[in-house]
Image (cartoon, rainbow, N blue to C red; front, side, top):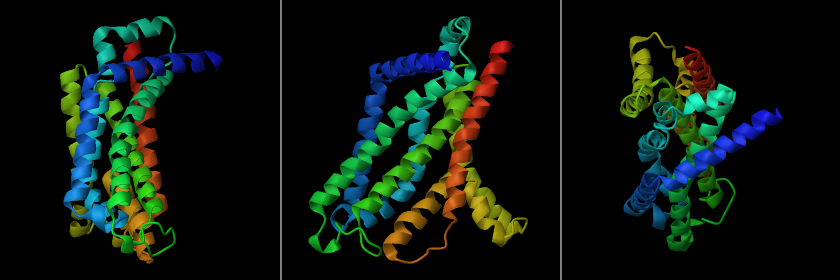
Length: 275
């Protein structure tokens, strides 16, 4: 266990150095921060309060967050494969799961900074510019609150972490960085757009029962994220149960995508090394 912990720490530190030295990540962060702030300002959420800003940002972030996950993670594993660094790591007897966990942790920290940074800046701007009659400093049910916006930030980061897990899995499968980028982009389109479309098709064709709708939505990452926001942020602020999703199942759905992707990535990497 001590050896695994030491290996993880060394690989995690190496990954952080890689992220810091890669200037494109800084450009991605600045672009996302600027876009998020512009969406809040353009939608009037900044002056209206936290909850209107959440409503303005929800749909754009469903699409932006997977794009950020692709930008941050698509090169993570395949770049080491191309440079032959994984062969060197094998000589040090680094287990695949340690390698995958360290790579993911380093990229997850970068993704968290990118996603949360823009939202935190937006929260500060809302606090400085919101009208005094919005009640933004209240924390109880039925009133706009910075606590609810903080919850929205956490849910958005979790959604991004789940999508990053899928991108890491794709990076393990790919044979080159160019292929990894294409596969990661395609996977995000399938997961984000295809999942919702499949649920709608199932309801229209009646092979998906109405009473199983919440469970089906929980298996689609962006739908699970959307449902959690409606149930734990928008619904709490309005003081009524939206009935849009089952929050517990939606949370389990996002965790399942994250854990399942990383477990599968570790297994496939080990198999790839042995072949």
